[in-house]
Image (tube, rainbow, N blue to C red; front, side, top):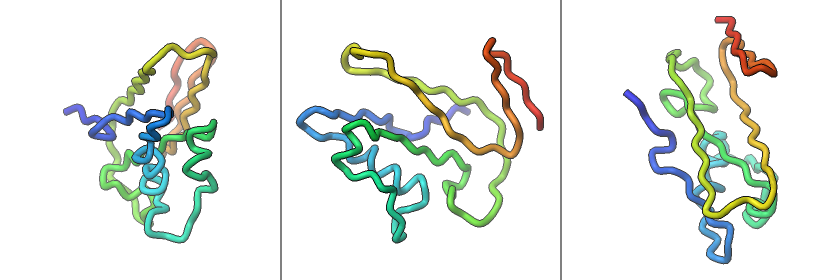
Length: 115
């Protein structure tokens, strides 16, 4: 069935409350940097000031940094973004993902795959 990742949605607040530590910490855990001596070169304060990134480990066994192959799965990915107030300007969403195949989306939003 459908599974939401993360199981609890990210809801960062970049106001004075600084409620964004879970999102910041996900960069370390989901990039395989937690418990290792590898920095991400983004400080906690920089994270809210224009260096906001989200990392999601979508591997079936949550081992994005593992040295083994995960079982291949098929599925759909939906990104649902909600903002607490209207944005003053347009923002860009950049998605970086790794696949064992090629997925190409052209300017007409046609999708081509090579499995």
